[in-house]
Length: 101
Ligand SMILES: C[C@H](O)[C@H](O)[C@H]1CNC2=NC(N)=NC(=O)C2=N1
Image 1 (tube, rainbow, N blue to C red):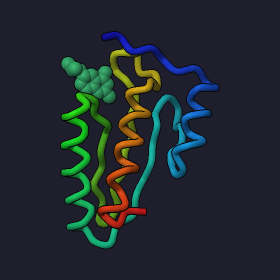
Image 2 (image 1 turned 90 degrees about the vertical axis):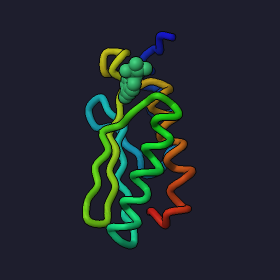
Image 3 (image 1 turned 60 degrees about the horizontal axis):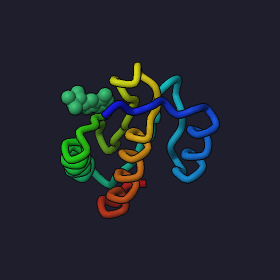
Image 4 (image 1 turned 180 degrees about the horizontal axis):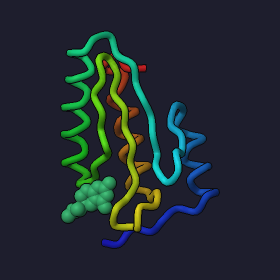
């Protein structure tokens, strides 16, 4: 099913409900800090599970005790779509369980 790019206003409205997330060029991004490298690794695995479930995948970077995401929609020409917002919301939902902030 084709997914349409969000307008600038729509992106801003979605971001208003996603504290910590921002628009970097044409991508939604957020970095989280965790209590340890192992905790960060576990969060990456959890995000990967969600991404497979949604069939939508961010560029996901594991640091020493950080996890960073950057996502846009390839099939929409690299624009931000509702699929990116949905992934961001799902990651926000799982983050507290990993002690991520
Ligand atoms: C075939 C498969 O559904 C597509 O390649 C999916 C997989 N994950 C994806 N992830 C992202 N970020 N954008 C896409 O357009 C996309 N497409």
